[in-house]
Image 1 (cartoon, rainbow, N blue to C red):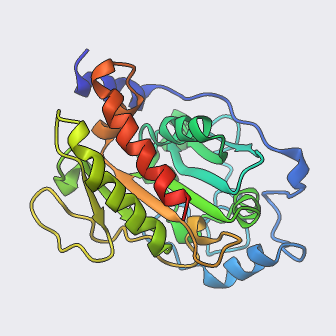
Image 2: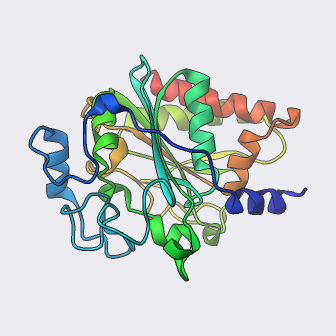
Amino acid sequence: MNARGLLALFALTAFGCGNEDPSLGIDPGSADSGEQPAYAELHSELTNGATDYYHCYVLGNCSSPSLTGSTRCVSGRDYETTVRTRTTDVVVLSFHGGRIEPLSSELARAVSDHFGYSSYDFSAHGSASCLGTLNDFERFHITATNFDDPKAIDLVARHKKALSIHGYSPDRGNYRGTICVGGSNQEQVQAFIASVKQNRSRFSLYTLRAVDAATATPTTGIDCSGIVGSARANLVNRTADVDGGLQLEMSNEIKADLLSSESRYSSLRSVFYGAIGAAMSQ
């Protein structure tokens, strides 16, 4: 099967069941945030979410509709959240997972397992009655500054460092190996970029380009405009360390290559994981 067929298969497949960590003790449908300072702070920073169908996750935190206020799309049938807490300073996030941004859930889990990081995943696979005429991205994408699942906010707030995995649209026309590096932690951003530049020659199938999303001028094959991820309300930046986290935006193709078991992509994984390790050591 060629790469296009592989991606189509992933886009049509409902990914694994999620579970919730009962130790968090937070009702995702509750608008009462009295015992969650970080959650209360986020409420005041939410934008109007006008570009998303669901304006936020939690009923009462934004103008209608919110995801937990929906009767059209319901937890367990159309989406799941999965929390995995480990003894680590780092949490990896895929809150645009499942069919929203294909292969983000799978890559985030692979990173989590490789390093032993904690993780949070929101995986959408909407039924026909949920989606209607929309696709999963159009129905379930919630902008990072508006993604206010209390379980996710609490988990990130209990870790010093965070990494979020995303996928940008093919409409950008980016090169296969373009990684838009963002987030508010500039030390992590620069460490990731420097590590990729230093080691990318080890992978020869195509050129890896780690680009600072905050400073890069859009050009052919390299467009990171609008995906800087530096806002404090962005889930990845709500860490215990006030410097925030690291956001990686990638093509569907490079995510598929990173997840491939083919030996020709071993050096790609080595460069990618090495860069994450360098960034998280900051």
